[in-house]
Each structure stands twice: as C-alpha cells, then as structure tokens.
Length: 479
Image (cartoon, rainbow, N blue to C red; front, side):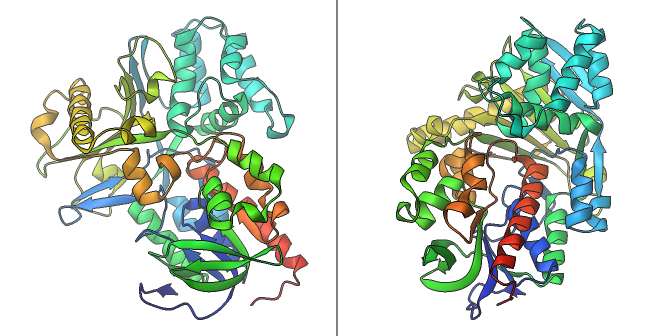
C-alpha cells in the first residue's frame, strides 16, 4: 500500500528500506515479490532518488535529472527484477557526439564503431585497440589490481591525451572517475557500455518510475514518502528497525540506500561498530557533485537532430580535474526530442539538459549574492555553448533553470551533493556492513562501479540476495 503522508505505520516488517534510489527500489521489488513484508521509505515526495524529474507549465515541460544513458544490460536487469513491459521500453541512443579542440567524433558508442574511430581517425594500430579491449574484458573486481586509470592509458596509448579523452571523458561524466582512480572503476563500466552502446528509457524517467511504483505495489511493498529516517535502531547488536519522526518501526532487517558515511556515522552511530571499521568509514572519500542547466523550448519551437548526447569542451586537452572547475570548460548536452523520448505525452516539448561535474565546496563557500551570480554566469555560458550547435536557440527558449551541488544536497540528502556516492574504498565498507552489524545492509552508490542506473539496480539485487540468506538464518518467518 501507498501510505498517505499522515498515515501512521502500525505494524512491523521483515525488511525496512531507507531511500528509493534504483538500488533500494530494486531490492524492495525482489524481496516483496518473494513474499517478504517490505516497507520502502523515501524522504522526498516521489520515488527514484537520482532517477527523477520535475515538471513546469502544467507538465508541458518535463526535465529528467540524470543523463539519459545506461548500458544494454539494463534490459536484462529490468526483465529479471522488474517486468517485461519496463524492459521492452528500453531503446538505444545511436547518436553520441564528442566536440572539442582535439577531435570531432560522432558514434553509436559501440565497441565496433569505437574501434574503427581509434584505428582510422586516431591512427592506433588494430592490434593495440584489440589488446586494450581484451584487457578491459579480462578485468575482475577480485583481482585487486593497483593500476590507476592514468597508468592504464599510458600502458596502451603512451603520450596520447586525445585517445585518453575519447575513452575516459564519457565515463567521467557517467560515474565521476578521474585519472587517479583505480582502473577497475573505469574498465568495468566502459566495457558494459561498449558491449552494445548507450540506452535510455522511452517514455522518460517519470514514466519509468511510475511503472516501477505500480510494480512495487503489485508485489505488496508498502511505501511511505516524505518519511525521513532519524535513526536506525540497534538491539543486542543487531539492526532492529528505524525511527521516523520520533516513532519506532521494527523490522528484522534494515537496508540503507543512503550514503554509506551517513548510514554508519549518522543514522547508526560509531558506538555500534569496531574502531577499525569506523576508521575505514571515515577514510572513505565522497565523489564529485554536478551542476545542471535545464532548458525548455517554446511550444512552436523545432530544432534539427543534433545528437542525443553531446560531450563538448573548449579546454585544449583532457584533464579530469578541470572537469570539476567552477569556471566550466566542459559540459554534456542531453537532448530530449519528445516524439522519440516521450511519445505518450503529446504536450511534452523539446528539452535540453546541460550537465557538468563540479566541486561542492566551490559553490558552498559563495555568499548568497555570489551564488546567484555564478548560477546566471553558468546559464549564460551554457546557452552560448549550445548556440554553436543551434545558433537561434536563445530565441526558442521558454524556461531556463539551473541546479548546483547545493540543490542536489537539498533534494537527495547526499553529503556535499555527491552525485556518485563515494570513491572506490566505499564499496568494501558497504559490502561488509552486515558483517559488522547483523541485520544492517547497504545498497547506496559506492565505489563508482556500482554507480549509474544499471550499477544501482544490480547492487540492489545483490543485496536483496544477501538479505534473503540472512533471513533464512533467522528462521525465514515473516513478521
């Protein structure tokens, strides 16, 4: 059932899930479908976490928050853990562009075409290209390789910053990876995309999440929105429920889809963990945040097809640190053509969303006046950047809004507005959480590998399996 805002929760549950990002929702759906009594809690007024959207002008303007792209594996994941209808609505984006001082490339983002571009446009020997892709395919999370992204590219393409740029830049936007992060954080994600290209959900994020909500309710998952968890209850060194607005709700298991640091250090408390575990948790670094500029076109406006995703930059070379700079030189445009992305909504207008990676502290330190000035500068420079592809776009715009890391923090409660959770070391803390505190599991965005729509959904499935194993040890008796 979908609780109303003022409804009181009067029963206990097998599993309480904190946060309705795709990991939390997927875990809830699997556990509910398997007969467990599940309560899904969300602090915001709608489900989805980062897979979200907002409306303007009586819903004629619809803006998706996330970049609309994920690997083909999302089809299998949705078919297995959700339903065929959702899986069948996933379609390929065939027009991805890179425009910068080093090159201009148009691709369908498949391994075959990428190989062709590297060989024919960048002059890389076919043997080297094949060896690179074979190396990525052989990468294994359990190998514990210390190789960094920087070392990976130097190994195969020494001195070729342009090659690093076309291979690395889209993944930096996809999960926040830098050249100094472990190569595994790049290799697995890039290989997933390279299998068949980039995909999106036809119908838009609002359509997707509403379908997922219907599936959750069909599988008897209870949902309560605007329900911020104050505390995770610990009884006899086991997680035993949560406190919402001062009221305790009991459960056998708690699964947190919140940030791992917030979960351990905030909602539970240091006193319930070993000193070494707390030390490791405090050492986990947050990932970068992001800014967006949302542009909605007038009803009568029309534009030529300029691409689905456009990675554009004015910076002379690739530099993952420069991608975070307040003085933006690189941005990605996601173009939403309504007849392609939202055919079910005849009133939907063309929308273009610009995304940039950035540092939270650069925005947080600004005064209120300077903050608004920087937002306006970002909007103006974004429009100027878009004019290179659509010279008359300024006259066709009806709505322009901007979001910063502070916006992300406000609506997602992610510390410092982190768009991709934590850096790689967060994955170990997340996966071992239930070993430190029985009954407490985690499925938030951690370790970069688990970032993005596909990674989040799959991690939710992984943790749901771990939860079922735990419940078996508890006697598998539903509350």
